[in-house]
Length: 320
Image 1 (spheres, rainbow, N blue to C red):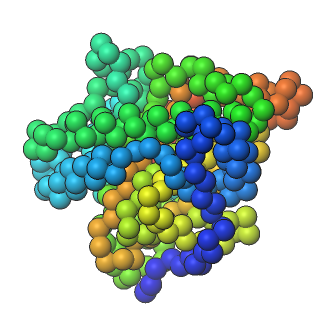
Image 2 (tube, rainbow, N blue to C red; image 1 turned 90 degrees about the vertical axis):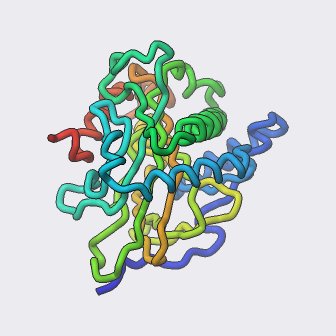
């Protein structure tokens, strides 16, 4: 038995883009042009100059590990709610119908309405759940969410400029976003599990944009245009950004949502900090708004309806 394999990558396969000139306004168009080119190719990008302090990342990571290393009986107190907030244990997600369940565990939180109203009118949004046995988790997680969400806003500005659109084009309905964050924990994966077992199986991300903070363990693999799996190893000081399905749909496929997976063959624990950026649930995803009324594209759909459809297929707790 062995692991699913991927090719080593050269430095130019996944571009590294410094987004600080976009963030500080010194040369936003140059960054936008680079983001545009990368999104039309592989759809995966390393970004530097993102502005998230290293100490914030470390604090979030330490408290997340404290949570995952706790026994499942205690974690069960914050088991995922019907509004997709809380802990999903191993085996709770499967990316393809005929695949083995993923080995990962996740802890999910997201934007909350100020009234704390349960549900807030959309099935994928409700009150966050915080464990009492890791009291620092709420503070560090909320701080990381805000910082990563700001990065996503800058990137969405860059994508708009790269498409010759007003820079706020993708940000016009973001006061009540469906964005959510997650800590994703991958245990060490024995090779006896075989080539068809994954930390997370091959998939594309559901929403608009994913901002990922890897650790130094590695294991992320991306499928290139030739159908080959290539490694996306950690780059110190960077975040990994990838186009997700709704942004690909919004751009009529001009921007690529690329399949990826995780194989943790390191013999160590692996932990990722993930921000899934999505606008308000009522946001219309329609490529004709980007390229004009004659654009051949998928039918318009709201962000909220699309995500709900995808979540119902992927997560076993929604079928219970």
